Amino acid sequence: MTETAASAPPASRSARTVERPVTDAERKAALAGLFDRSAPTYERVGVNHFADLGQRLVALADVLPGDRLLDIGCGTGAVLVPAARATGTTGSAIGVDLSAGMVARSRAALREADLRHAHAVVADAETIDWSPQEGVAPPANGSLDVVFAGISLFFLPHPRQAVARYRELLGPRGRLALSWWGRPDPRWDPVFAASAPYGRGGSSHALPEDSPFRSVEALHTMLEEAGYATAETVEQSCVTRFRGPHQWWDWVWSTAGRMFWEGVPAESRERAEAAVNAELDRLRAPDGSLTTTSTVRFTVARAQRAPDTGAMR
Image 1: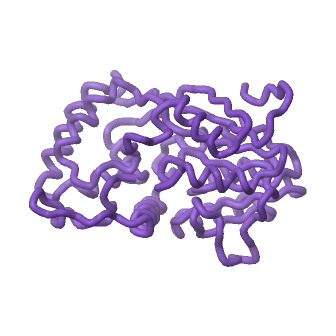
Image 2: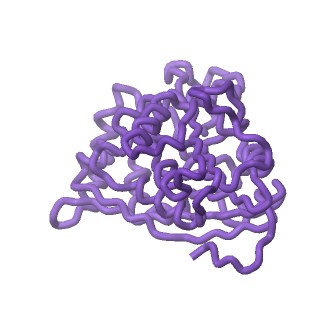
């Protein structure tokens, strides 16, 4: 999350104005609103991205039939659906998300896949506490086998408190499985540098200086302090392809990346887009397509130390 609420009107920000601190409730409301606006087109612009990452995370978590699962920041079900398939009808899976629009998408995906043992609820992913929705109550402490956080944990205002809460929910053989971004494709640095002078709303992916997501070592330290016995991280490439700049723009506006562009003043939008398009043209392949290759990190932390499981492949 950024230092100011994503929903704050740009006109309120000036060098002469001293803004009051943004509350956690405001940050979370802004985050929910951001993903509500993205929900109608999220993963619907013809780009295979989050679904692939979700399947990889589920595979690395070694879900067993009968496992009891929780997916925080479930979005459109990129993790929740394959996780629910893996645990089967003898298990259970609950997805939580602050965005009602995203929860509606997850529920639709579960219905389409006929995964009746899985559910999605609108809830705070930090506290995991809600009034029962559609007969689904919050999990009890010590009741879960896996907590998933697919490309989501860094959005939370208090990730350290969140992972401590997940540790309480896990049983003795429980594990926390999360994915998060490593180094973006350096070839794309000029694209983001071109847009930077025009934005006022910040980026939903901007990390505070003390963020545990700045390095593997920092993340592992956070998990150890939260009571996890072991943590292991692997890095893999994430290759995303676009037919051309038009599809890339559609994709940006379908994701949390829209937050930056919503903060670009209307009078600057044309110049900002032109600056970015000039850099995109330099990246195009002979067929006009664009490709970005970023690093994604997958971490599995275990509640208790286990003998050589070979879980991370």
